[in-house]
Amino acid sequence: MTHADDVTWMERAIELSRKCPPAEGAFSVGAIIVGADGTELANGYSRETDAHVHAEESALAKLQADDPRLADATLYSTLEPCSERKSRPLTCTQLILRSPIRRVVIAWREPSLLVADCVGVETLQGHGTQVIELSSLSGRARAVNEHLLR
Image 1 (cartoon, helix red, strand yellow):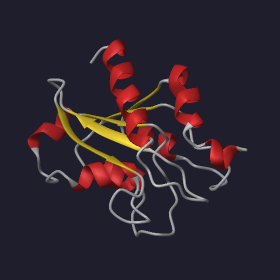
Image 2 (cartoon, rainbow, N blue to C red; image 1 turned 45 degrees about the vertical axis):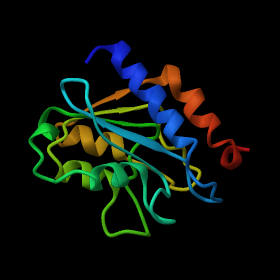
Image 3 (cartoon, one colour; image 1 turned 180 degrees about the horizontal axis):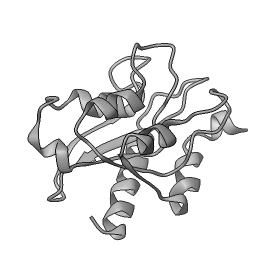
Image 4 (cartoon, rainbow, N blue to C red; image 1 turned 60 degrees about the vertical axis):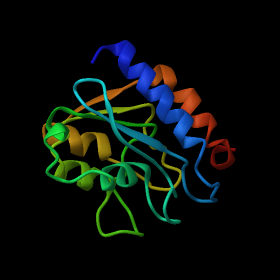
């Protein structure tokens, strides 16, 4: 994947995040899993299937865990994958690490608004996952969450 491809997919993830039902106390996030050949494998957004589902969780749930395409796939998420969570037994960081995905692209890091110290990026990197932050798109991803950031 080139940087231009990463930007295009992240722009699509930002558009997905706009589908999230608004919620006080929860970010609106979009996620897309893209195969090495540039094919979209799955996507998801926060609260897509229930009030507690996260975007990465939703996208990953649409694929078989042993799908061979995941080994070379990239997961795009508009927000850093969560590293702490009350509503589910596994965080999005843990779900990604349990998958074969080893490349993650985010638009912005989780601010200390809801979680004091999100360490999703550091945890993924510590387990050998490449994490790329497209800070040039962070403003667009944050704008979807203005209701929380005021």
